[in-house]
Length: 392
Image (tube, rainbow, N blue to C red; front, side):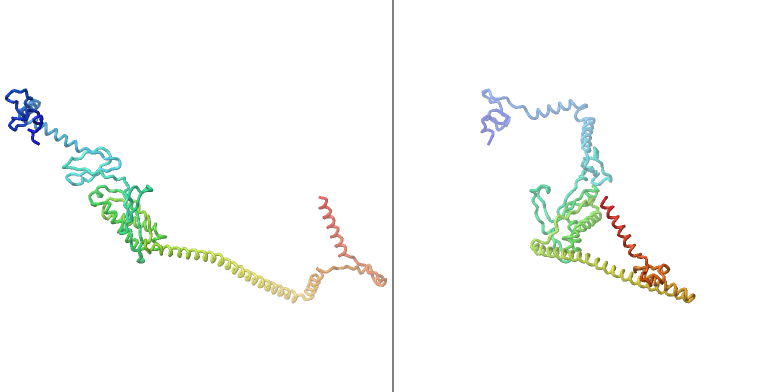
């Protein structure tokens, strides 16, 4: 739309007709009371230059003014060199694109501004997380977070040529900020590829049954050590804090068969443990009984031998004494034999001097009934003891 079609004549006012195409407009010659003519642009620029010259000492083009302007610009440029390092950061200043050799601690510092200098402030306290074999959308701590499987990363070949599906997480942080910034191009991808390579190498040396059950902690520790060694060789400035296995499972299409094998192995282990417990109960008991019989036989053998040796020694001693005095030995053997015979026999002692031949002729044999006396004495003792007990 042209200016002539506007009701007011143009953006600055004025009559739309008879202005010879000038946007400033002109006062009509017939006098009809139109709007005022706008100021001339050249005149406005000229007046502004004169006012600026009056403010500058020595005129706008003086050397002092140029130097003053240069100092102001230089001061503003130098002020841009101040930077702040947060408590969780570490400053890495550069000069002409090269690291100056020292890092800066948290606080306010200065370095040459761009384009001469530059400063990087990476977060050296944050613990970064790399997921391998899965991708978690949303916060992992939330229940509603969804997990997407990545079979091209998680499926690995074991040492016994089986396939296992492993999901794990690597936690790492920055340990050397300059090496982290300048020695590796993509830290997350580098850690991910290195961790996956190390895990595949370790799983390739481990049988599938051990990977599924007993050696998970060993796999984590070996992966952590190997990955940290690889990062040190790369001079990546990364400290691997933890390697955590989330899931170690057989592939989905054969997981039912693996579950059956696992249940069979559990039954086998249970039966083996029961048999081992039974053996541990029977074998020690049988060994103890056998040892008891051996010790009893040994004791009986030792007893018989000792008794035989004692009898032989006693016989030799008797024979030696008999050979030296036969009458005395005979008498002693006779008396010992009578003592052994009469020790368990009731004895009646008869006094031959009292009875004599007259007593025998009259048919009266005087004797002392010692066994009867002993019996009566024993009965009286028992009756007195029982009466005393009943009284108490």
